[in-house]
Image (cartoon, rainbow, N blue to C red; front, side):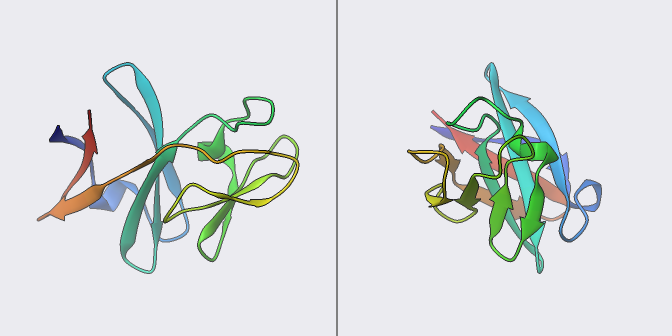
Length: 102
């Protein structure tokens, strides 16, 4: 597994998100209080785009039906989703944001 550069830090303001594609996977990047997070973009309930969701604290809410996922773990924090989403290691190297996929 290797870290792949996916964005610049300035592209993801606090409380915002950015959709990127890595090895054919859609990954939603989030920034909260200077820390970055990476989750699969597709909600496990009905496939809603998490990158379009509202970030509240360390959770993102799916814009389609309101399921919520924890940014650090990908675990479900509110129904209707029944299972979590993939969560990826992320690091900042200078201004570059890198995600580890494998």
